[in-house]
Image (cartoon, rainbow, N blue to C red; front, top):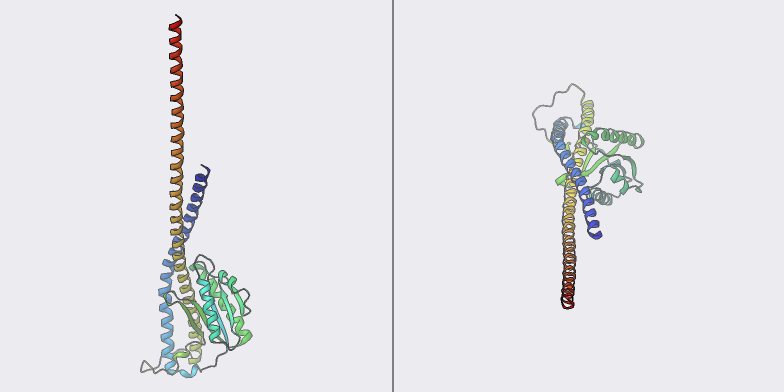
Amino acid sequence: MTRRQDLEHHRHSLGEIREIMNSMKTLAYMETRKLSRFLNAQHAAVRSIEETAADFLSFHPETLPEVDETTRVYLLIGTERGFCGDFNQTLVRNLEATLKTHPDGNPLLIAVGHKLHSLIENNARVTTRIDGAGVVEEIAGVLNQMVRALSSLQEQHGMLTVYGLYHGGHDGIVMQKLLPSFQHYLHQPPRFPHPPVLNLSPTEFLRELTEQYLFAALHEMLYTSLMAENHNRVAHLEGAVKHLDDKSDELARQCNALRQEEIIEEIEVILLSAGNIDEDWRQHKSLRTKNSVKAKTSG
């Protein structure tokens, strides 16, 4: 009896854990639905700015001189929460491979996400650790901290070459160059016969366009990474829930088998008790018969 009760208690505990994980999976799925709306708009905004920059630089390439590589900064977009498989480990492995490919210089790291921090806590290159976004509403706060961290590094080191390293969903790990912006649009032929009409000087226009691009591209990175994180979380928790269901079914089979054994034992006890009653009854009946014969004989 005790063994079956232990199994039933364990099965009940697994059921409670299963409900919690299933709720977490549902919340992660709901987050992907919200993010899909934000991502579509953000992709369109970034593409629009890039097209504008390409058009502008085809007529004003002198506003964006080619520059040599300066202090490199990598923005690593990890996760604030867990239950998303090897999401952060994959990011760190990709970073290590990237640093081996470009061994020159002394690159700096800005790490976003508490779970990522624990993986690179002893890395001397990390200059800033920023808490990541758990939901889409927290992305604006994370972005503001990233901009402040970049501004601080720019004050210390001057011109920066900034790369974003993040999960791009089906594209895997993406490394995107953020600063200096639009370098790959230099020396491209114009797509239109006439230059764009500007209300600002070309230099000032490019500066403001770069600021807008950085703001939009950082948003796109954070949205894309959070989307990939939640997709990973849904898949990871779905596997965990299935495993718990299989374990619960196995415990149920064991409990049923033990219950059957208990029922058989109870039946055997009942039959044994019934056999003893019959034997006592036969002995009692035989004794009464003998006593009756003796009474008749003596009479």
